[in-house]
Structure formats: C-alpha cells, structure tokens
Amino acid sequence: MIRTYNISFSYKEYEKTEELDPEDYKLILAARDAALNAYAPYSKFKVGAAVRLMGGKIVCGANVENAAFPSGICAERSVLSNSVSNYPDDKITALAIAAFAQDVLTENPPSPCGSCRQVIAEEESRTGKKIKIILSGKNKTHIIDGIGSLLPLQFNGDNLKINLP
Ligand code: THU
Image (tube, rainbow, N blue to C red):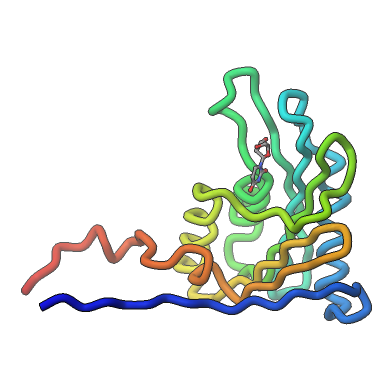
C-alpha cells in the first residue's frame, strides 16, 4: 500500500509597515537594531533577531562569526540561547529576523537556516507554544504562524522514544 501525502502551508506577505500589527513592527525594528551588533567580518552579512516574550519583554541576538567558520552562530540561535538562559519560564510568542548585506538592509526577507529551524522547533516543543515567525525585508515582510510550516516532518523528542507496536 502506497500513500501520498501533500503538505502545504500559507504565509502572509505585508508590503506596508502600517499594515503590520504595531507590536510586530516594534519587534522588526528591534531585530534591525540587533543586527548592528552582529560580528560578521567574514560574510559581511549582519543578521539581527528579536523575540517577544509573553510578559512583553523583547530579547535580542545577532550572528557572531568565527575564523573557524563552523564555530560561528546565527542570530536566531543566538537570541534563543539568550532568551532561554535568562528567561526560561517566559514563553516566546514571536521571533523577528532582519539582515543587512554589506550594511544594506536586504530587499528580501531573510529565511532561517536549517539548524535554526530545528532550534526554533525545539523551543516550541519545550514551551508548548507556537512562535510567530516574522521575516522582514526592506519593503516586504513575511509572517508564518509557527515553525511547523518551515520544518515539516520535524525530528523532535518523540523520535527518541522506543516505538512499541
Ligand atoms: N545567518 C544567520 O544569522 N541566520 C540565518 O538564518 C542565516 C545565516 C548568518 C550566519 C553567517 O554569520 C552569515 O549569516 C552568513 O551566512
């Protein structure tokens, strides 16, 4: 027996900042600010990420590169480490990302890499709360209602359990 499954997802695209929820726009501005603190001498690609916690706090992170390239960390994992380490009990409700290539804000919304998607997925599992993902370009913002859409069939803690028949 062969079954075919189709997975589709929808996301919203905003062209005008006035159309955004003001709280989301605030988070985008925080991500843009955070990108200015990135340490990206090798790629010259500065990424900023900002999360909003249930209590209303905003926590930021940026990419931090290393001469040993794989030792660098992306902005998304940077902000999640920061947030989980300092506010473990305050759940993340939204995550905004913005990037500057050679100091110019990117036209296209940046999209989290595979490793970051996996780490965002872990955070959703840890707290049991979906994280709204806000990908912000210069004149275009994409909003996705949770990491499930960006990482279907994800590997999570359940995969580590013994599967009894
Ligand atoms: N980078 C991020 O910070 N987030 C992503 O989702 C993609 C890539 C960083 C890693 C590296 O410092 C630079 O961007 C170029 O790949």
